[in-house]
View 1 (cartoon, one colour):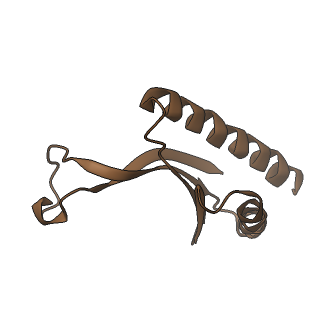
View 2: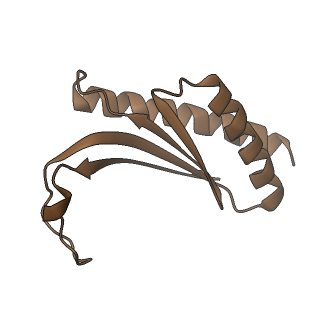
Length: 112
């Protein structure tokens, strides 16, 4: 299983967003999300991963977290709290994401 951790925000002024795909300088952004994407290639483990994503969805606060199912697993998003120092919030998100990842790996490896 793979874990990808990132942060994504929406541009404040979408009209100023470039229309080409080359790398550009960052623009002012708002409404950011921390993102953890959990991916699995084995079909049986993927089925279990999706099942656990649904359980996780029922346990997490829907105002703060979002779960999106994907073809290869699921994406967990958390709104960036503007009142918390970004680096502390990021470190906390990485720790939280890795904790979930490690627990899921234990579960999926036990399913062999």
